[in-house]
Figure: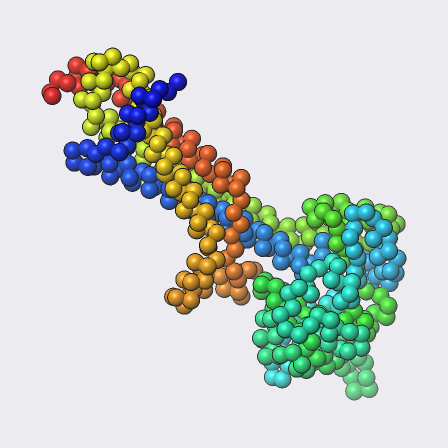
Length: 415
């Protein structure tokens, strides 16, 4: 048990200055080292969490939770599958889609893209594409209107704005007396969206489902149906159950299977960063060892006097443990406050630095996300602070033990 005397003496040693001030400097450096290490670990893990959150939200905004497709590529009786899917209590909505590759031409500019035919009314129930349209309207995709909605990067590459004409050319040709001619159709740009992921903004365009069926000559068939489920983490089991209830014979997929490498790499990166930065905290915490060793050396006469007036070795041990613990607590609390402040204001800080120095931290054409998000999770913060405190406490044991073993006669021999 600690008594007020040990706590008072330990706090006094933290505040006191040695004859040359070096011990106090070392204490300040130890506190600062722990604070910086804790703050860096909080910020880095929050950024990794932010990437995971943004990646999941943006992927699910453009990709359905699960899909059902025909093995031959054309799902002719998609209405039956859609009705069967929505009868499952775990399925919120189902929407058909048509997928294909096309070449888009606008003036002298051209670009390859994935062309996706959708029903705007049904699609809004399974994805969030309508909410990320920045120009024009998602409702411009009406049957027979031959309107197209482009990603912001794709529209920039084509130099196309809302109202401009874009020629869509398919690889599948039409046999004519003059030979095989590619199928083309002129579309009007009805809207431009930006989801913030280069993969989608640069390579994906939307048209109406009926226009896509006519363009790809699918008749009433579609490429598949997209499902929205109640629990995204249970999507694999739900879509399998829907397929079984419908009689089977279809291909099923879900968001975890299509993008599993993204999330797996994020988890691996987070674990590696945590271990590496934990070593930084360990190095900062072990600075307490050198601090307390210097204090024990500097306070030998004080220890000897305390021993001669009746203080036991355990009392001396507790005094130095309290001093080291105070250093660890101060450093951890300072790091906690610094880390939380930096994390909460990280996007503003990054935006300020980018505008001030004319640099770009994340290039949109290199990374999937062009922003630097941060997601502060208190369980991670609590774990970081707990580890920092434990390491700081462990670092006090050896110097405190050495101080407790100081012999009064030896310490006062040359005084």
